[in-house]
Image (cartoon, rainbow, N blue to C red; front, side, top):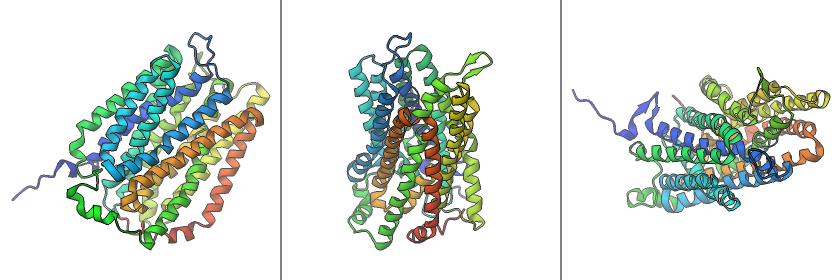
Length: 449
């Protein structure tokens, strides 16, 4: 009797490749650094220069404008990041170089100089552009075509993102607001350094994914990149681009969290709890906390529906996610009404809004990542992932513009308008869902356990 010993890249934990958890923790620390900085960025910009913990003293509109540009560019940079990986160095090295740029960017933000502030933002944009699309593509590469575990794997990966976001909003947010903004920025840099070290240590579990297809040992894959797209591949790309419209609308609404909803929590929400005022940045952790608790349950719900033969396609999930998330803004409408009548609004409105936003996010964001790895042609895998994140970036810019408009239109009008548009737009796309799914040519039909 002989016992087969699996290579490190074949080993599993909880029914998933060990490589998934290497990427899980790498992304967790990357998101710790990104969301930690994001949680205090707008607050730092609007804080008065004469306060004990001075900021830059910008107006809300100016701060939200920069927030919109910055968060857009962070994700738009994923297009060149994905192209560089596909064309020159592969996903594995792109993630490594992106991590190095991020450590440098977050560390420079700790310097209390305006040049350091803009330089740090620029390095973070480049770093996220190199890391974000490529690490997500690597997750898809861990699973064979038709493996139903792929969606669950992306949800587990997504939970890693939000463990980092949850911890950073509490830790970096508290340090930034209470002890100094630049201490918070520096702490985000330490988190990214930990993620980079962890990624390097776990390379033996990632030997078969993320490699450059132009290498000699991958000559067959290299030749297959040279072939033109087939009719099926072209149809699938069309569906992906149409699904990206959902992505733009979703993130244009959802990213009010770091902008308008962040300022609303600070200026118009009664944050007193048992005699203690909760830091405004802590509300950023609600979304991540809900994802940690609900992530696997939502993924299991959709997987069970799929196995029972009920409608559970990726496009269907994404549409439902947009509608649920949009509904959450009605709670912010209620908060605005309460503020107008009473002079402050209760915290539970924010909690309810973030709960609905989270459920919607779980139905659209990890699903979209998985959907791309199912439909995108192999030779354009990272590029399509980069385009997806670019659409996320355009959504972020839209979020900034919507947030700026609140100075003239008022929060109630903006929140209610977002809610109505998301629900109506989602419903319209649902009417064409079946026709669009025909163009996928059964990419999800053969999924099995």
